[in-house]
Image (tube, rainbow, N blue to C red):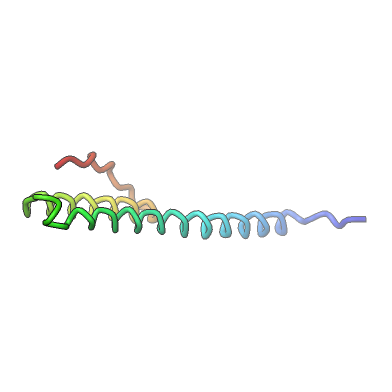
Length: 87
């Protein structure tokens, strides 16, 4: 005979499952994002690429805007959609 969970136990189990899912997905996605940012750094090799300070600043601003937007999604404040990136 199995004991049926109370509504409180079901809610606690669901919260624990959601927390585990968040931790797993967030860790994976952050690692991928960091790797992608590292790849952008490969474009800094002046032996292979020619770029202006203005282009570098556009890259930095686009990355910063994306981080601000993403962090804003974790707060109660709404953040406007950032425009796409273009050099």
